[in-house]
Length: 561
Image (cartoon, rainbow, N blue to C red; front, side, top):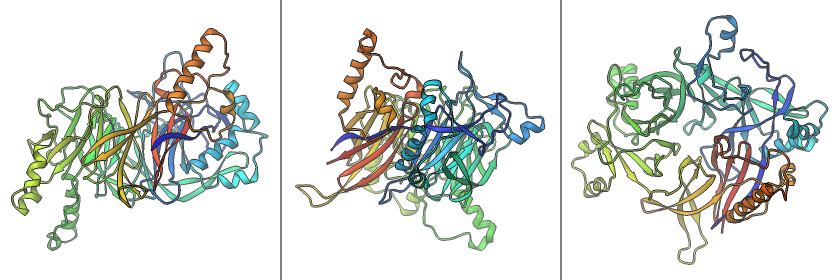
């Protein structure tokens, strides 16, 4: 199987009129203008279905989440009504764009159809030249309106940091809003009203079923779902990590706090967090004689059976915190082995079985599989077996000073020259293959990740390790004709596209070819990197995924026999 680009289009969106005062509340139902669009995050549905998989895309006007945050005054009726207590930094010599954002949930085809309606309007042509256009007077076809009807939206008044599609509650989304100091829960099956994003383009708004407000000055950042338990690991700006209880897909209460004291650093914002928990043990209900409160206590004690991995952009290390030894004045931080240090991880696989995850990608190009050795279970069953002793010898390193023991294993060779930044949503996936000359049917195990140089790398699992299968580099079309129409592109290898891009830049430097507009020139900036990747379809003989890159481009890559 070789990768090829199946389709590629540029996402454009309409935004409500913004005020010069950042404290004013923006009305999402008012008239909207076609403005600059930037994809901040792309998430995928936790389960692969027979049809195309839905994705969740967070778009905004170009604002980036830069640390540290600027505090806003908390006194006055305007600030209390708005509920935004922090703001982001503006880059030098640049005006701060509006701070609102919008969540789009639907299939890739729904996103392309909605973007075509906005892009093919007369106002969007002026937008590409002037930077903004008014949606008044534009018209859309009725069939286009009906085709984009399954796309749902939710409007944010501040920039969200992380969007998590729950695995245990597949209808719910948990989103962290750092500037508002709260976590919100969205139910995809409920809708409160409809929003007119574009004339004759009306979409249903997702209902917010819960809003969990944290204590003052406690800023939530990254969030991760705990395996097989209704808990949520939340990383904060200055208060370590939190374990939040989930009830019916909504945040109920904070059941445990893990302070990161004693790290010899003044500030450790947890921008990346990963929960490492063993499978839930099936024990006899010994708390039945204690009544309801005994069962509740035994249920909440399940959040102490694992560990939390934390990473900060200010330090090149991964901090492992044991949940059972953290709490109160104590800190569960445990130093790594002297010769087996773990660099800062940039991404981790989503909710997956302990047999295949979680896997983290570190800054030095390593893929490490973390796990928890349940010593209590091994003590009850007797001495460890021969296979367990063999697995212990094959481990790369372990945090074993206190219980539970957290070990990690190298799953692949060091990715030389590649710094991974995103794992494919859905984690490792299995594919049933029936077209083999040696076997009638067998299963293949795939894992996909991206690099900071716009590379999409497919890894094949062999025994217990992963090997590189193939890779493709994502580029954008330089011809204005491709920008005007978001149609399906012809498949081409990455070497040809990169060579063509070099030739175009060379001709432009010599003055032989002039390309108008900023859509054809993309400098090496943070905004141009890949902002998310998700599986779309996994069938017999075909793998398909979608990636968001170069601010507002969506590309579908297919591996097919």
